[in-house]
Length: 520
Image (cartoon, rainbow, N blue to C red; front, side, top):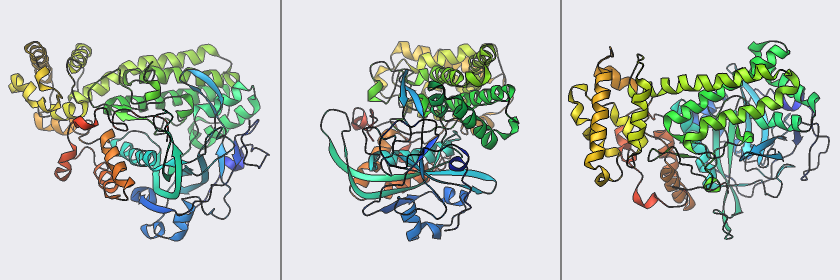
């Protein structure tokens, strides 16, 4: 296995001088050295062919004992020194102090085809940042992370990636619903891949501790390797850096809203500095269109991270990052202008995104109200977001009165389509038909373009749960089937038509299908 190793994080940044793997507060250091825990009987379940290629590895490499040992934590490649990152974060709106990589261990960085990749194992054992946890992960959450990382990439959503999914051969004790009934589950390890796993919290921890020297060192490192076009360090460069992070964060969240993805736990330690979707925990896709929905049981009362609030939380998190960077910039007004830009850009980009979902290429002054009326209608009765927008591309402007028939598969309870509801939909479809009449594209072109932004297949929670249930019994075929299908989410793929369906009734209230915890 020949990798072009180019470590920078653990060579250019200050390390924790304490080499013992004990829980502790780590000061004036960006990381602590720590080796993965040895696993009892590792077994590789799946490997991403595209990620192998991105790293310069072959299918044959992935079938070697060395690959299995390295990516399950049992072997360390020569000239590499694994480590866990130190960071803090705001969790559910409150400063939580030091957090860090509690169960992620970074193995190495590589360069291949002018791209940089960092590789880390999630679930590879305890670190100085594990607090009261064991640093391990279970098969259940690992399948969800592995499948979703790659599915998001193929949807066109900025995301961390996944190389491999493996069983550790060890049993892990978890209390799935935090109800005092822990059970042993199969342990698993995912190898996650990204240009960098730096989070907002990496910068916040040093600002909170008033360790401005290490803060500056980390920001300079980040700009040097990931924002190199911004130039040498200066106040102007730091402002340009923050503006770029703001834009990337906004773009990522607009994509989430487009496909109906709900992250579930948008704490600042789960926000990538590169604007990548990171940390796939209690996430979910909207089944019924619902601004108030969150899949996270921990957030059920206040619904801070609900679908409709994700753009606001993105801004809130950027405020916290601005506070962290302020000691290097000392210009509150300049930072405020960038944050105000987020609000303005969101309105523009959000409307652009909705226009694309509706097949509109020109702009009209009444588009905002057209979208608003549509969203109001989608809330009249439980309406499947994915199916609705996919079917909408079949709408014929010459048959506006048949609009409801075109999207009828999206309704969960057809009996709720009362005469009043029907009238509201018919009014909207008539208006939509008139608006499409202003466009230059024909229905065939419009359908093709709409089907490039409205996916046919997403990783619905119940689908992941079916794969998990099978995997618990030792059957991993469904993992592969879903993986292959989700590589082409915008294609028709007739052989997978059974997955283009509303959530089944049995999944409505089933654990893992409608509600999830952070217990993984």
